[in-house]
Length: 178
Image (cartoon, rainbow, N blue to C red; front, side, top):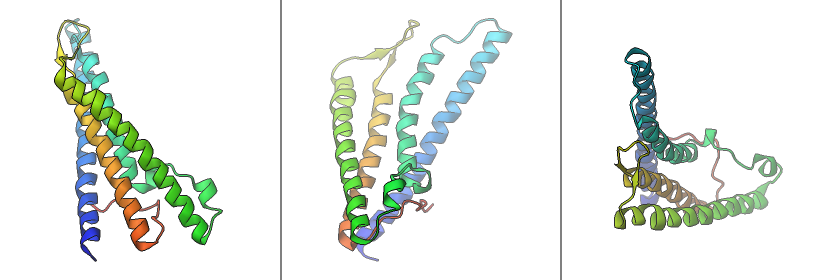
């Protein structure tokens, strides 16, 4: 096992755990928030103002951490199996390489857009989210979105490098090693 393989394995373990923890924490906060809001609405006849705004904001990083989770746990990732199951040998490698290349370009474009507009603009201008009068900064949620996007992009690039180095097919049913 060379240095790139060891780095790939360590990166996969770290990101797999981070993504799993991030999704779990966000979903737990969303469920607890809705439960407390329902309890407050029925017992105290007063809902918690602005809670649904925060829950909506939590959906953004949960979605992008979910995409990263799908990429790290290949068994849950939707692939182009209809075409790839019919290809063999070099045609299969070329087809998979093209799929990874298109994914890398698409994610790089999306990540660049997310970094430049979503995160950088939030740091340079004051953006607040709140419809109830309770203002909340918008940058933490956008920053978590960009972290999830960068994790997916790094995984795609590592997979491309491994494909070219080993001239091997990356199995889509690979599970993350935790």
